[in-house]
Length: 139
Picture 1 (cartoon, one colour):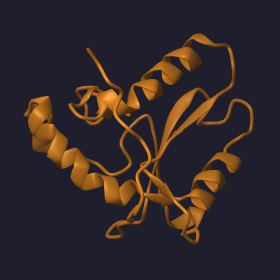
Picture 2 (cartoon, rainbow, N blue to C red; picture 1 turned 180 degrees about the horizontal axis):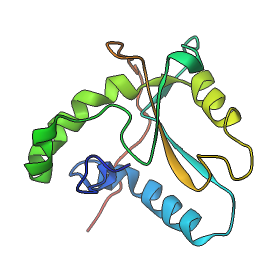
Picture 3 (cartoon, helix red, strand yellow; picture 1 turned 180 degrees about the vertical axis):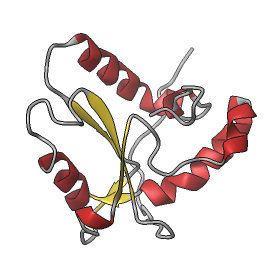
Picture 4 (tube, helix red, strand yellow; picture 1 turned 90 degrees about the horizontal axis):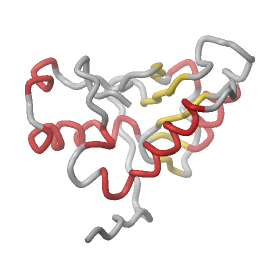
């Protein structure tokens, strides 16, 4: 997802690109397709009770938990900690992720051919106890 008005992507940040590079590839493939797609871009997902669709912050083609305006001027290494601070806001239950998609599957709807961001309600933060992704080895 674009992090700010500059169009920089979270997947391009240091320490993130090595693990989440498949997300960029999947998005590029979808863009080239003729499918009526939606790409859900939550943060980490957890086995917790649903918060409920009406309470979630849902965005289209932008980060659902906005960064401060000054972040636009930061180089990627300094932007990384600000982005990392937003991850708990975007840590959502699996059930909520499914609800967002199921509520927006009508062909040609407003989310058609867009990335969809999801975050918890303002002030709420989630936590993921176990992380499975491992960075890709380069070199």
